[in-house]
Length: 264
Image (cartoon, rainbow, N blue to C red):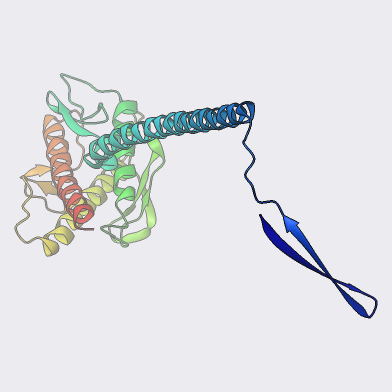
């Protein structure tokens, strides 16, 4: 047992109350202890279930994130493969493809050349020259030649005269009669040969070791006349050599563009 002292202020007086406190412990009922143990067990179970549920949610979210990462890695791998493939392509070489078919030079499968044994329609020849002018105009910013102007118009393309940039010659022809056979067409051929020759000289200033397979002058290529003569087999050979020189120069430009892209 113990004593407790209480103070209480009433009005202007302080009352002192002294009382006896019974401090003897009372026994806790068994049912109360059972309920407490049950509550503790229930709380523990609920806590475990909560943590388990949260852990399962986190594992599910982690699996989703890993799946997204795996998908992104696959896409990145595919993109890098495409980039590696596309880096080996060149639009100039793939869109305007210079090759040969038998005795003829070809540009995108359009043949250039005519002689009495194996005639090629002028529409095909004109289309081939149109592709050549388109190619040259595409690389004009790389190897500028302002003294000769190009007008890419498909099968009706034009090129300016060598000594007169205001006079345009027709780089196309047909079988129509003329008092001066193919004069305008031949002037266009000479301008084309001069343009390709100037490209070579510009590239040679960058790489002195660059040599074309055929020697090109203003009017001849390896002693073959560039100008057209009626049903002349030698013109077929001259055009094949001329486009070979152009392809050689184009290959050098493509090589340099690949090297520059790698360096960058």
